[in-house]
Image (cartoon, helix red, strand yellow):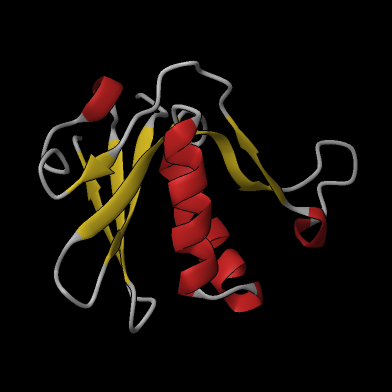
Length: 117
């Protein structure tokens, strides 16, 4: 099973703002919920837009590897020299072989997950 994913927000105008996530795609639902309990969907939109400029996210809201404590979670961006924008034009593609897609409703925070498996 692959671990790549796409993370996106469905905006009020039905557009999609998204990015590629390299690691831990299968287990992102709990981390998205933790992120949204601490931050807003606007914060998530800003994170996604920033990540687009660096090719995506290496790991999303992952606990520190030493403490394993979710309160110490952080997001690490890729450092690709090529930007990667995922939006409504390419959301239905499985970018870089992504195995999972997480689309969050901007207004409600509800998560829709799709899997290739």
